Length: 104
Image 1 (cartoon, rainbow, N blue to C red):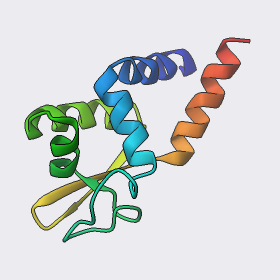
Image 2 (cartoon, one colour; image 1 turned 30 degrees about the horizontal axis):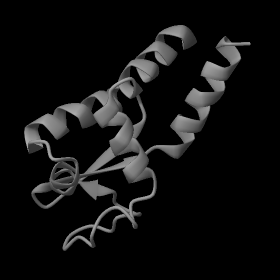
Image 3 (cartoon, rainbow, N blue to C red; image 1 turned 45 degrees about the vertical axis):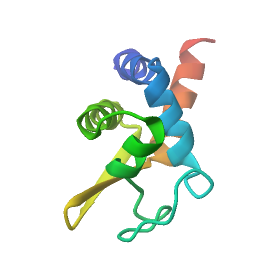
């Protein structure tokens, strides 16, 4: 089961855009302007802000975020009409430990 989960995580991070997004949302304050709704750290980053920064359409970013969420790397929260994403640091750290264990 760990192999399948690790494969899903590695696959999610194998895309350059998704990897870049993960790097940005892991430390959002220097990468995104303040949001009118939602705190960058507590609530996460709005899909629209991610789309603007990376230069992709909002539907494309939503698809990328869905892949990251399906892999368990991010969580999401809906506030008003917006969806905010932030990394699930516990899951990311556990995933890295699992992958490290597999490669020993």
